[in-house]
Image (cartoon, rainbow, N blue to C red):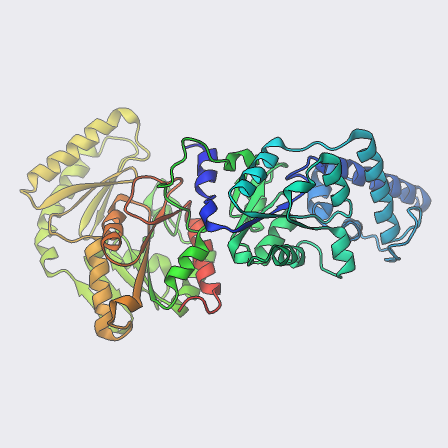
Length: 531
């Protein structure tokens, strides 16, 4: 599935009542005009200052200074921000200062004059795909607002013939008149939602500036879409964007779209939060591929400090269980949090706070078969470069991620022979670039999930009424489907972690472990809407 399709999956119109769009760089292509005006302003000023003070002239760097210090910010704030980066301090002055005056406001007014001159000369270019998307959203019944730090927003819209597309707009004049804080503060996005008479939690925002995505995220918008016009995808995500596109045309639905496709859990968070309200949540998470990225070797899957901190906060509020194919002692050491429940070996071995413990009694019967299969596999696959035969207490994983394609048939045949030689004691399952041999005893992550829920009721940690208990299970692999199926047939939500939606029993999807972290953080930060 291509990047465009993933963006569409993350943009479910049913989750929103309104959309709020930045102007420059999102709807109109005036970013270059603004950047050129800023560059002319600062180069003229810095050159004059350098000559007067006998210093070396260091010009404005449009590719670095524009996005970092001025893009998306109110004009005077942009002047002050850039000058501070050069250790230059000027009097603030007054908005009435003439453009020639050496004050923050004077320089800001000079930039405004330069921008208007360029606008009158060159006109306004628009992003046709953005206009088409906004028109589609209006046709679908969504309210649309515009936000801009520029005092020229209305003039730009009028020149471009786009004024009719917006039900409300907030610009630099509103910032000054209402004494609002500019981006990255949340004020203008909060005002836009208020003017549309919607809650930010029911709206999405579209921004191309780092300060803008910060502002929309701070305002509590359900989804923040970053538009990458300046090769800053990673930075947009780091500053608060949920998804990033190169062009808003990527969000337009087409005939190939399906209403049955799996919705993105971050996009539909408010919908999920409503469903979770008044429930006693129990959080289940796989480890590899869910809390950590998939890596070439098992020992490289190390939990980040940020994810560990997030898990700790979640565990302060909810019961949390890690359900992994790894041995329990292994995953317990990797996560290193004492107040979590750990279910290793796909749930064959469980332990947690308060003396919680369970190990399948019959599991011991399968150890001789596993020992024999391990020896056979290591002997047969010893000469194949890159193969890893990983023995766990109650399973054997044969990793072939680093193996050349011509050896895969040999590996698969060796695994099949090991299963056949086990006299029905072992079965083969799959996963991400692995074959796994597990006991034929009917136990899996779904059964472990049910056992844990029952154990939590018996311990008094959750209420016995079914309607009060709501499990959330996060997983990325074939073995997690057993848990998703249990939730699909009963009560609870499954969240698939995958680069793109795929056939699954899960209810929602998240793109990667980073998205899992953001979802968990929202659970932690929920104020009164969750138990």
